[in-house]
Amino acid sequence: MSSTFHCWSAPPSCARPKPPRASKSWSRGGFDALHKPYQKRLHEAIARALEALHGADLAPHALALGRHYYASEAWDRAAGYLAQAGTSAVARSAHREAAACFEQAIQALQHLPPSRAMIERTIDLRFKVRQSCVPLRDHTRVLDHLRKAEAEAETIDDRARLGWAFAYRVHGLFLSGDSQGAIEAGQHSVAIAEVLDAIRAQIGLRYPGEQA
Image (cartoon, rainbow, N blue to C red; front, side):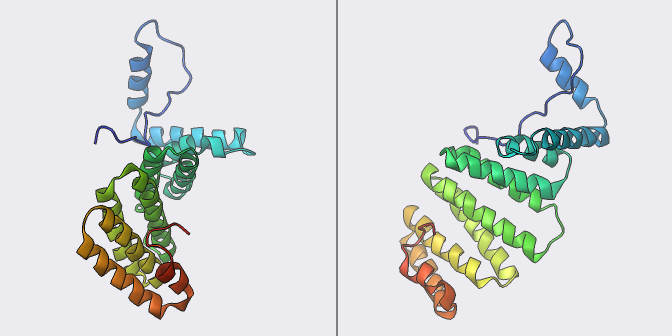
């Protein structure tokens, strides 16, 4: 949608003499004229230069690093930095920006070979998207990510994350006006809590949807 903040933006052009007119279009055109393999190398080189330059304090540059590593198709590093950028956005209540960054981190992870660790990271990022979309009242987006989280948790038989997905759905469905769906999701979460004593206090006793 048009109002959604996009975590992606045009990559900066490399340093070059400024042309007399239309410098922005010229520089973007010059970058796009590069073959894709060279574009990827340039993005990776910029990211590594940023890391070398700001190695002691990378947090303020997480978004730029995530963008460049995403463009260079270094998916794991891109996901890590984009998730970090999303967390920073949450800290300053920039929830639209945060949700966009978390979603792009998910996209990066989906380029990696499937593994339990990758799916766990994906589910956790979906929960972070949910956390940012609640204050935006974007219940459709919340429920879409929670449905995907449920399916992913089932895939790796992760009962704890599955329980949290159902518990969060109770909150989302209730806010969206689907009381019957909220009751059914709550029943699923309680059933899982009864099996997993370790999360019974978190899911069975805490108000559904409340962040730990």
